[in-house]
Image (cartoon, rainbow, N blue to C red; front, side, top):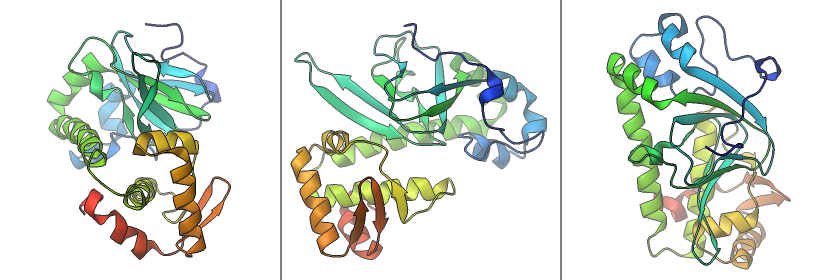
Length: 250
């Protein structure tokens, strides 16, 4: 593994992650464990598996394509971008991962990571040894099901964005999906920061950067959004939901 992959750090500089009974508020696996009637006290094995990583700063790699696959990581804070670089040196953005979301799941089928993961801002992670969490999943059936659900969700999102959608539909779906993901972790659903650059958003949505800027400006002119640099406020959410519906399908 490269020397930048999953760098270690002093745990004392990290934020508190709950107490003896409560999971961290952004824990990616707490829902699955609590559904099985297990709190942190009953899951000391899980707590031993967790290694806190960070802070990573913008531009630091979590892992690189080709690094040996040893662990998956849950984002505690910040945003992580996953991407690949083709033979011509062109970058292709695969996704953006927010607090409470997991990176590295697409490496389960192989022995190396099939993409790169890079911090877009200050990032904190929880690193889970995958061989050990696989053993734990046999004790907590809901955990294994949760991992499968996370993996299928990533595959489904990629397939939907590959469809023949308009720029307005793609942008609306991106904003609504981001809003829902943030809301699920207790953040504001209607006002948030775009932690990724517009060029990255354009790459992810398979649009030209100028198209993303043009769509955002038109949405703002129509009163659908308020845009202040990277801060977005969804003003006419229903209109965006309607545009996004064919892509998100729920």
